[in-house]
Length: 176
Image 1 (cartoon, one colour):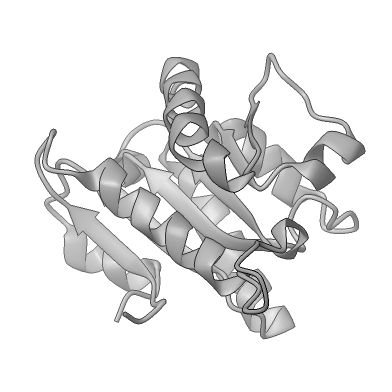
Image 2 (image 1 turned 180 degrees about the vertical axis):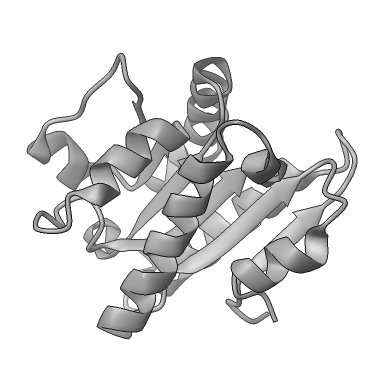
């Protein structure tokens, strides 16, 4: 299993959320202590970008139910819900809307939110072609630029049910 960037195009109900969960579990496995099997949860953050607040709330519940037993803290970050620095530090999975993550990552001087991010999952990546496309495009481009500037790997995973131009999106996301 290679931690490369991925673009998953599959019909609704085909298991894209499970693929996202497997990528989160892969990141979790990388911070597992070999001595006792516990996890160094300060070692990583995952960002899951969902297009609507309702989907954000659904994914927070989904991830909390599946990852809570490992001590992973999942929090919502939307226009309605903010997180303090201490809440961000104690959170491993941040589920957010594109607009909120765009605002957070635009603050280049303050890398509090972004320095520990190892995985960015973008649900409904086909919205690149929609009115909100420029926001998603900014998120992806900023993540790629951060990888190039810091030489620290951040895995990008795009999920979509319908994506006619998947070759273009894959190239943009640096999917091999």
